[in-house]
Amino acid sequence: MGEDWSAPKRVVLTGTGDYYSSLTNLGSIYFNTWNDGKMLRAIPTDVGYDIEQLPDAIFSGSYTGDPFISPAGDYLIFRAYYDEGFGRGDLYISFNINDEWTKPENLGPTVNSSAHEICPYVTSDGKMFIFSSDKLTQSEDGASLQDQQRRINTYDNGNSNVYYMSASFIEQMRQAHARK
Image (tube, rainbow, N blue to C red; front, side, top):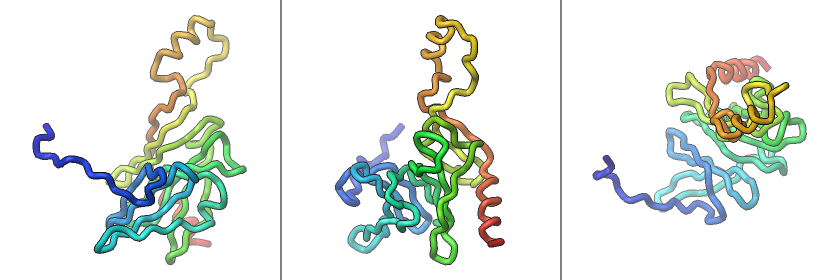
């Protein structure tokens, strides 16, 4: 496997800690930079990319990142540390309506928790939403110290487990914006 693969080539966008990217159907790359927590868009040109910061409505001075842009470029789901969040980092969505990004909306307690939610992704068919979280999935009330130690060595220890759910909430949220 992989005999016909080419060697990977680094894509230099800003050269200042570029990471976590996603791509639109038109080839624009949405990514963030490690050093300042900004999300940017790289628009392909004949000689490389034009880089632009996403609007202040999204960045607003908070460390943002892990952008998932829809293939059509009509919504963006990302991680942010806004004051009104549920925990260490929450997932938010913003819609691109008439070339304007809406104010980011917290995805709420079904997705977010007092833990850290990161790395959003929507499957290519648009049906499933996937993300990572540090939240525990079951209560440890009354568990013995031995039981708690065993749990630390399992997949369900709160160290960035992967979760999935229906992505139908995206369309419901978009329709709420259309009614405004």
